Figure 1 (cartoon, one colour):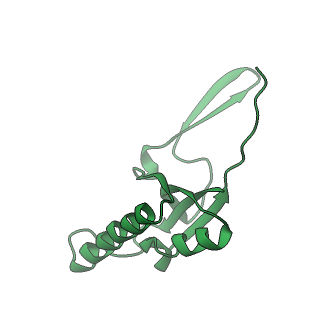
Figure 2 (spheres, rainbow, N blue to C red):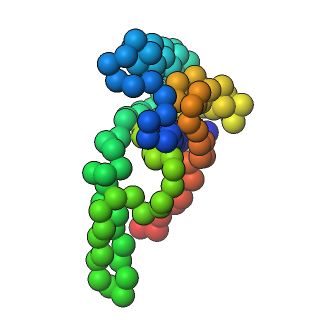
Amino acid sequence: MQYLALIYSEDGAGPKPGTPEWGAFMQGYASANKTFTEEGVMMGGEALQHTDTATSVRVRGGKVETMDGPFAETKERLGGYYLLDCKDLDQAIRMAALIPTAAHGTVELRPIMHVELPE
């Protein structure tokens, strides 16, 4: 089963770039990536630019509307993701726990819904 691991944290939470803690934090991501690859669950993943670079798009009454920033107003922001192919939710949870941001933020696991589209 495929899971999207959505990585959330509040701005300012966790280690700051340029500090010794930041180096250890990033090494934690390298270690998680290595484990995901060795266990054969890594399908992809990327960090995202800050939410102030986001553009939200909606279509209302046939008209395209855009606005700067994310749609939801929350304390935590989506900072990145992994797409993992795990045998079950237990394995997905074990993998999510390896993501360093889980120590000060939240990793939300969402199963991928596979939908057959009409031709």
